[in-house]
Image (cartoon, rainbow, N blue to C red; front, side):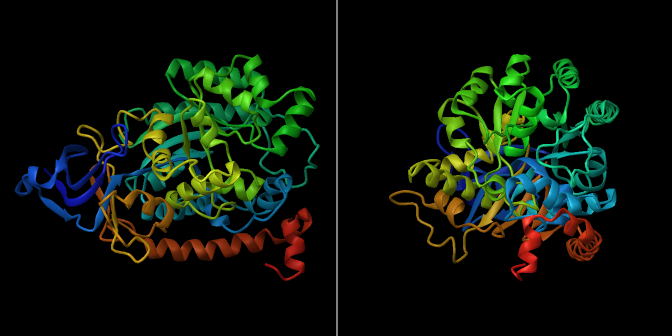
Length: 475
C-alpha cells in the first residue's frame, strides 16, 4: 500500500446515501483504491505514507463537468451586462487579444484554483485542446475530459448586431473537426485523458457538419458535449435561420440528433416539455448555475432535470462571468438558486448537490466505472478537507452527522488540504508538490494587465453597458 488516510470522516458517495463512514480509512496502491472501511480494519504498517485524517472529511475528487480554463486571464472582464451583450460586446473585445500562450497561462491559473478547491477532473471545452493537455493538465497530473470546440463562426463577433445571422465558414468547421478526430487518436491510450466531440452550439454549426460529427461519435463510441438552448442570443440565431416557430431542441429532434450520447450544457432556454423529451431520448445535462445566473439572470434547470428522471451534473463554465472555478461555490450556488426559484427550502438538498459534483459528474462524462465515488478498484482521486476551521465547526455525529450540509453551505474551498489524483499526491498539507504556484500567479497577473490594456479601444467601441459603468465611476 502506497498511501493510507486514517481516522477520517469518510464520505464515499457510494450506495443509496452518501456512504458515510466515521473513523474511516482509505488505502491506495498505485493508481487504485485498495481499501475502504474502518481504520481499525486497516493494517497501517503496510502503507508507505500515512495521512492523519482526524478532524478531516475525505471525499472523492470533485468533477467539473463543463469548464473553459483558457479564458481565466479575463476574470472580471465581463459581468453585470445584458445577456445579449455578454459574448460579443463584453468578452469579445478582450478575448480577441488572447494569444495561444495566454490561454495556456490562463488554463494554469484556472486549474490551480480548481485543484486548491478539490477538483480532480476537468471537462475542458476549448479549441486546440492538445496544447492545454500537453502544457497544463498532464504536467499538473490532473484528469481531463478534453472536448475540442467545433464551430463555423468567426471568433471576432464584437461588431455584430444581435439580429445579424452568423455566416458559416465550412472550412473552419472541417479544420476543427479534423483536430477533434486527431485528439481521439493522440490520447486514446493516455490514462489521465479522455475525449469528447464538441460541436459548440446549433447557432454556430451547420446541420450537415453536425450530422457528420454524430456519425463519427457513434463510430468511436463517444459522447457529444454541446451547448444547447443557452439564451436569447442563441434563440435569435435559431429563429432567424430555421424559422420563427422553432427552437434548438426542436431542430435537433427533427433531425434525429438527440440520443444518449448528447451532453446538453445549460438548457436554461428550454421548456419543461423539451427537457422531458431530452430525458426520454437519454440525453444528460450539465448546468452552470453561477455563470448563467450572472450572464443570463436565469437559474439552470438542473433540479427539474433530475426530478423528471434525467442525469445532471454541474460545472463552472468560464471565469469572466461567474468569477471562479471552485466547485464548492458552484454546489452552493446550485442549491441556493434552486431553493429560491422554486420557493422551496427542501429543493436540491446538500447531499444531492454533492452528487452533482461527484457521481453524477462521472456518469454524465461516461466515467462512472472509474471515478466519482470512493470504492475499491476505482481510480484513486481523493481529497481531504480540514474541518477544524471556524466556518465548519461544530462537527457532530449525533443525532445526525452535520458534515455534508456544512461542506455545501459553509465551505469556501480553501479548506481542502490534500489532493490525490491517480494515486499521486498533488497537494500535500496545503502545498503543491510539483507546481510553482507563485510564479504562475505573478505571470498571470502581469500578462492580464497587458491584455486588458490592449483591448481597451475595442472595448470602448463595442460600447457595452460596462462602458457606462466605467464612465460613472462604478468600476
